[in-house]
Image (cartoon, rainbow, N blue to C red; front, side, top):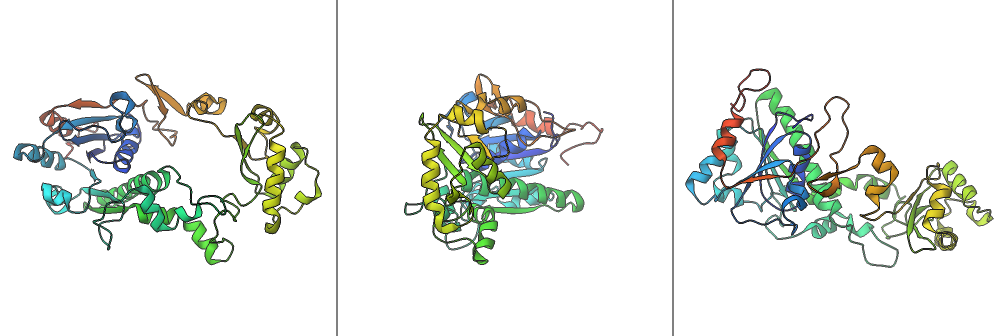
Length: 375
């Protein structure tokens, strides 16, 4: 693999969505990620083979950790690893004989990443839960949805992937930097409740300042403002507008042929509900394609709302190669972009019943600078 993390060695203990997503991010950037998976395990997404996109770019090692030999194989890998990722409930790794104390005694510079919903400590630490529960506790879920309606489930982006996997990836690389400077590894405790709360930092600040209401659907970025939201078109498809700045708002009105004086006072919150209804009627007068021809590419802050089939075909996404096809499966390409160390095209995960000896040997070989890796 090419990429900015080329040479990094990562152990991933197979688990639920956020931990595999974090491992995928590292693998996409060139890290050598080995997933430890029990024999007979199936994908948590219900997909297999090339369709299990979250498993791309790694070797999968199938081991029964109840067997002493398998446990020793993992610990031998730990001695050569830079990072370990696990996403079990607190205490599970300790019961397996792979807790932080044991692993750090074998590899003092190891960065030991722990991905959970509630965190390693706190009254809820040992309770079951899922993304929706974690973002509910953070305050984030309450803020998402229309006025007068229940909160809307934002898929599992906010907890699992944004507040969980991406925060863990950031924490791992922060701790890795410290380990490279000092030789001292540490545990990274990534909780989705913490991460979802952090994603809400701007809103908490605005709420404290009195410019963000606790009432859902009444604020500028939650669908309350008529100039920031989605609208249905004549053909039943949708468009998005985000004309926050006055000059962009003026351009939107001009291009849409809106001369109604009622729209002049953009930030009169008391008029937002009525202006939203009127703007909704205007967008219903044209198809989505017609609105795209009129507004797309301008500073009116406009984009069509595309579905899973449409998004990969959009000219902008095609020009940037935002999507790639791996083994016949269309999927998002690695992100972000790097000017000097671009990552390679993703590859389907390779599974083995037990190639631990081969991987251990591989991780112990000399690196490109002639230095022995893995301790």
